[in-house]
Image (cartoon, rainbow, N blue to C red; front, side, top):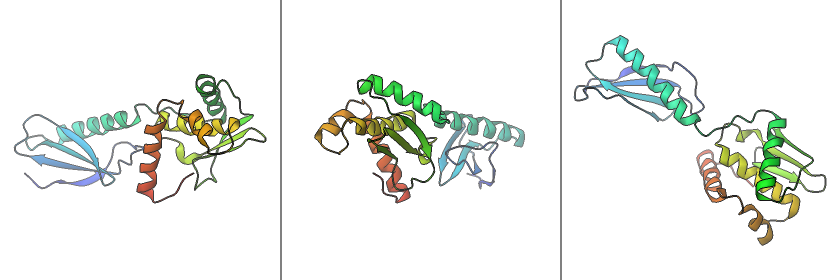
Length: 186
């Protein structure tokens, strides 16, 4: 195996943090090209016989492919209006149509994924959720919507949250994020 090509800036940005791209050439590799993320960089494995032009072409192609795969299943809910529309749809599907007065993104929640004030029907989601998979944002919305019906984290509350079919998976995802970042969440 030849020494890796020095890292270079990625062709495009990525939510996964493509950062630098490291190209590793292999004399044993004949035709296949593989790419993956490792420690904040993109590693692309190519045949040693590739020219620099082929290398550039394949690196750009593989970085784009990784970004597409990472973005699959991610909905861009950028505005508060889009967030409210999503909350309405989830409430109708899973919670009998309970409606919040408002739902909005906030930048000041660093220890919680979301919060709800049942007395006035307002829900706030941490902007840290932006870019996470749809089912995770949806889970946090269902969790906060459930507080409009059951303010406490009691058995009745968790039964409501459990109506969302991907609740357990989303909770596991958020626990993984917390473990990686060392941050608590409610």
